[in-house]
Length: 110
Picture (cartoon, rainbow, N blue to C red):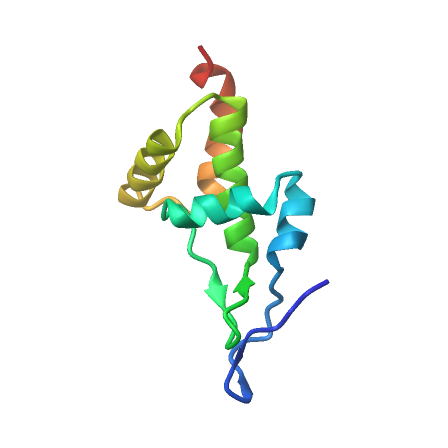
């Protein structure tokens, strides 16, 4: 189910957004895990006027990167922050970063 972001009475975009429970279910993780990623400043979802987290497709991609790096490669969250910082310096989009990680996953694993 998609949700639309409202600013006052005017819809800002026609893009769909997901709620935290939908993202957690889609990715097979607990919603508390997503909240922790937010507390660690790894993600910054938009908020509705009622302070509900609203996740875009890009947010879901970023969470997928975090899960891949931590659960499949064994990186800690400090390492994930470094990867995001390096990707930003290289001007990589999150989609490009995820593709790179998938293409080179075997090289990262110890």
